[in-house]
Image (tube, rainbow, N blue to C red; front, side):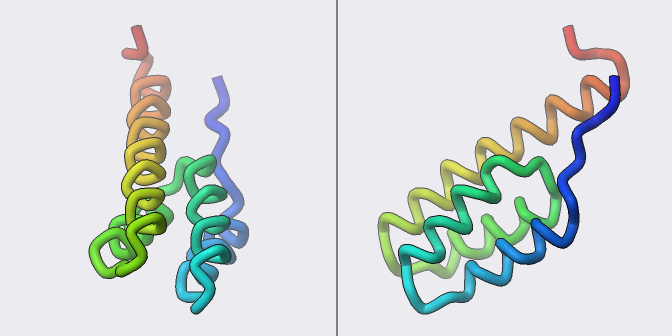
Length: 84
């Protein structure tokens, strides 16, 4: 089964949006990163969770990070054939 890896340029675009001053833009970027199983995205979500002051953005980053972590874990088990 082929792994569905996200395009790095898309991931980098959303990571850059995490620096926006507008919390709504950061929330949208977090929601997009939650759909992309990428290690760089996971690291960026962790960083935004640790430094974010807006409680809604912080919570969204935590939830998105959990989703990305599980997606990456699932892909890893599918790649090794131990996904049962």
